[in-house]
Length: 112
View 1 (cartoon, rainbow, N blue to C red):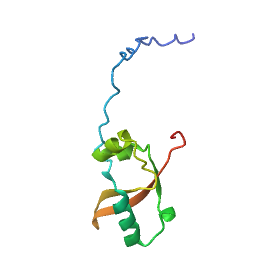
View 2: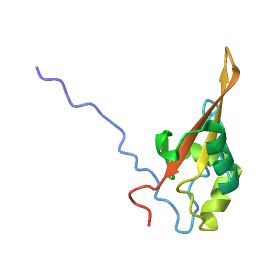
View 3: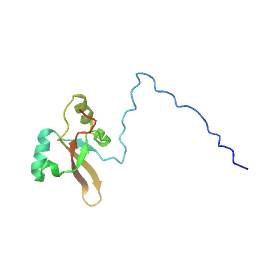
View 4: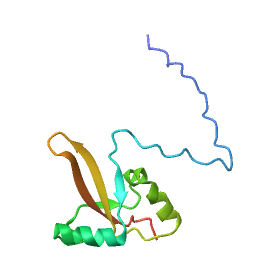
């Protein structure tokens, strides 16, 4: 005897209402805070590190981690060019207390 097909609910998800805003971004508690540095801070940080920007790890301008910085959305809404700026990422560390990492923002392929 062959098993009967399982009975699943065919409930449809409600369609989004026109004009409804998408769900707001809420940072996950495990996502470390990202801080987009100003152009001047980026320049000074690169001088302090003594490295060219091409040597730093990259992060896309559309990376969700950047949304943990409140200034990020304001910068994007203002149309500022974020490519070439640095991002400071602070992570808790058992040995150092706080580990700081820097990333260079690059443009996404879909951006103009």
